Image (tube, rainbow, N blue to C red):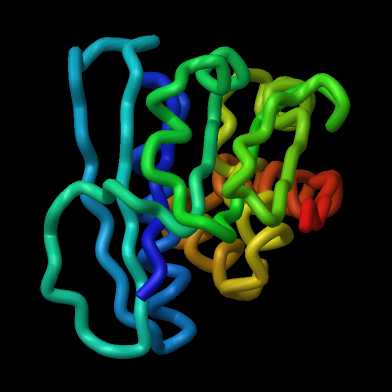
Length: 184
């Protein structure tokens, strides 16, 4: 079983990103579940979402304390020590950031890093700093755990019409613009 923890802020689509990924994993005949965790329910407040996927049914419904992958939707959150807490040895880290690899402080347990300027891409494509679709593309590019086509199909099901197509473009941009570095 793989466990993923998302960190974002209210209004960035953090919880919805985990739900879209559940749909995408289901399309690839995998079992998955998403669990949101809200602190203060207001725009801009820190939000965490948890996702598990596996080849067999998942019974566990708790928060994730030792993730295989952490996705950070908001660049300002990467300074919080809490987001790196419990990262497994050999984990994957996916960041929304404008910084270069030399400017980032990456935990030693991370073996693969994916990073993309999701805010700029989202502003350009969607006209707002809602990074969830862009980060879903970055997730597919960095992990290889599912195909981008499954994510795009799930996005279209979530937002039909023009809004869906804009989010598809944001996910594709995230997929194409993510820089991936194998650290070890």
